[in-house]
Image (tube, rainbow, N blue to C red; front, top):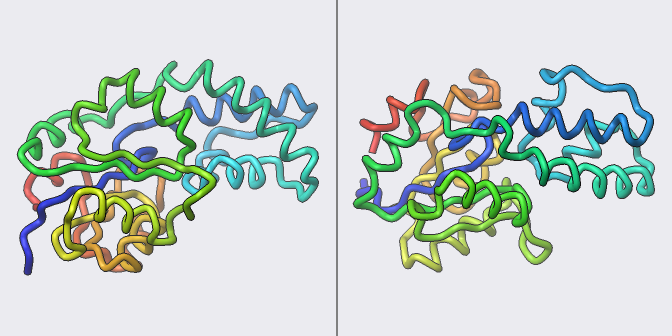
Length: 213
C-alpha cells in the first residue's frame, strides 16, 4: 500500500466545530422571514451538503423565491456570527502540527466567502498547501471533482492521499476519486452511518488521527 503523502481535510465537523454558529444564524434567518425557529439539534442534521441545501432543508419549502430570500438573509447573519463560537475540535491543532511534514489540503462544500473568513480568523491557512471551497464552476462532494482538482494541483497520485471527513459525502467522494478515506466519529455525522460505508480508516477522536497515517 502506498504511503500517505497528502492529507485532505473536510472543514465543518472535521476540523472545526461550527454547528452552534450555523444553527444560530439559521434561526436568526427564520425570525426575519417569519418562520418558527427550530431546535439546534435538528439544524445540525442539515449541515454538510452546501449552504443552499442547508437552507432548503431547514426552511422545508420548494418555493425558490423564499429559498433565495432566506439565503441572502442567512449570508448576512452568518458572516457576522461565524466566528462567535466556532473553534478547532480539541486535539486538532496537535494533529495539524503532527503532520506538518506532509502536504495537507482542505476540501469543503462550504462557500468560499465563509471558508476564507473562518480560515483567516482561526489562522489555519498556514497549515494547508491547497484549499478549495464551494464555487459555481465545480460540483460539490460527494462528486469527486474537488478531490481530483486537489490531487492535480499538488501532483499527488490518488493512492497517496486520504480524505478525512465526518460525512458520507466525504467517504463517497474519496471512493469516486480513488482516494483512501477516513471517517471521524466526533463530528456532525452519525457514527453508525459512517462505519456502514466502510472507510479505509476510522477515528473516534482527533487523538486517534495521530497514529493512523
